[in-house]
Length: 212
Picture 1 (cartoon, one colour):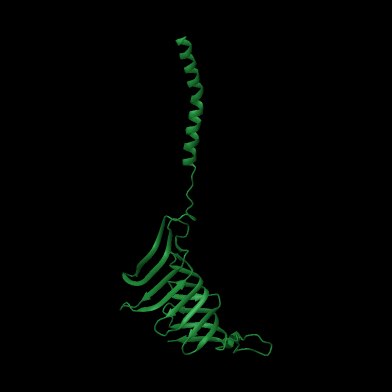
Picture 2: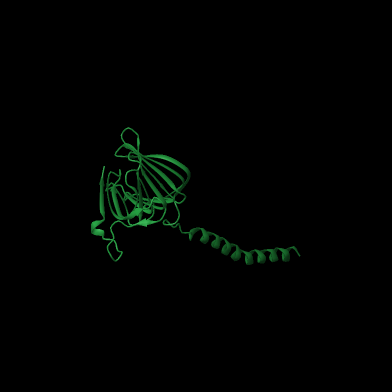
C-alpha cells in the first residue's frame, strides 16, 4: 500500500514539473522582453523646480517649473516642461534683463535650442516692452529669439502692434519684424498702416527695425 502511494506521488510530481518550469519561463520572459522607450520615458522626472543655470561659468538664468522631465538618452537629448515654465535672464549684476513665461517648453540640450509654446509672454525689463505669441524659439548658440507665428508687441512708446517674421537678439535690443498693423486702443481690431488699394499689405514697406 505504501509502495503504491509512493509511486503515485512520484508520478504526480513528474507530471507537475513541466508546468512549473513553463510558468517560470513565462515569468522570466516577461521581464527580459520589457523594452525601455528612450523617446517617451524620461530618466528623471522632477516636481517643483527652482534652479540657476550658468553660461561660460557665469550664472545667467533662473528656471521655475512645476514639472521637469529629462530625456538625456533620446535621439535628440531634451528637457521637457509640460506644465509651464518661467525663465529669467540676468546681467552681470544679477538684474533681471528679460523674463519669459510659457505654457509648455522644450530645451534641446545639444542644440542649445528652446521651443516655447502656448501663451508665451516675454518682457524686456529695461524698456518695459512685452512680446506675446503662440510660439517662440530661443537659440542660445546664436543668442537670438525668433518666431514664425504672429507676435503682439506692446511698447510704452509705440503702442500695440501685430507683427510677423519676428527676430531679435536675446536681450531684445535689436529687433526686426514685419508690421501687420497697429492695434486700435479702442478695441476695434486692426488698423492696417501699410495697405494698398486692394487691401493687401505691402511687406516691402512694412519691415521695421528697432535698435535700443
